[in-house]
Amino acid sequence: MSTPTLFNPETPAAPATAGPRRPYRVAGIDVSLTGTGVATLAGTTLITSSGRRKDSIAQRRNRIKGIADQIITAVGIVDLAVIEGPSHHSIGGSVWDRGGLWWQVVDRLCGLDIPVAVMPPMSRAKYATGNGGSRKDAVLEAAQRRYGAVLDNDNEADALVLRAAGLDWLGQPLAEVPDGHRAALAGVQWPDREAVTRAC
Image (cartoon, rainbow, N blue to C red; front, side):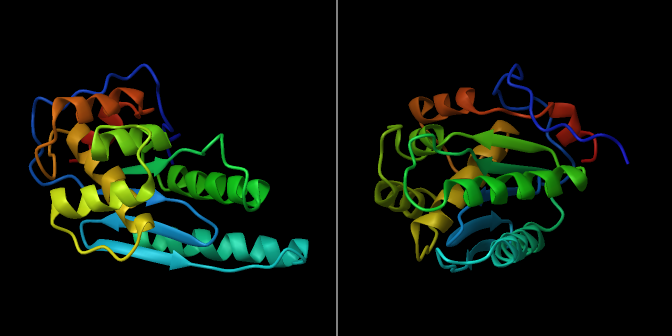
């Protein structure tokens, strides 16, 4: 198995000039210990989980593994996975466990030779609304309006925006996005484009 490319921050965020023979399969993943949103061509999915502060190491490990298993199953076989990067300002919940889950998902994607892009929370918000400081409810409203999606929660909305950004970078946008919004693509850590396009 070849060594997968996680990301290359030097890769420019510009649409591909030559389209593939088929639509790109892109997944958006908004990782969370309690409600992970996953968006693919099949639609959006919410993966829920709950734990307790007094859980043992074994219980925490099993919970994280179980969430990661469900995420990888929901993602399926794709050409690119766009995952939301960690929020450095987050102070709630278990930062250690959340970081462990994030890396486990990334590690599994790379193990499947799926190129991974990392989109910071502010870039995700800017791509959706034009404002990197927008709250999650504003992103949810923007995603529903632009993509005509029926979304039950902001986790799925975030995942859909991540997927849309990946498709836009590949030259197959889900919908027309203003230039000010598209500028957010420059803040994403994209993989080598050839790693995505060579199989298409």
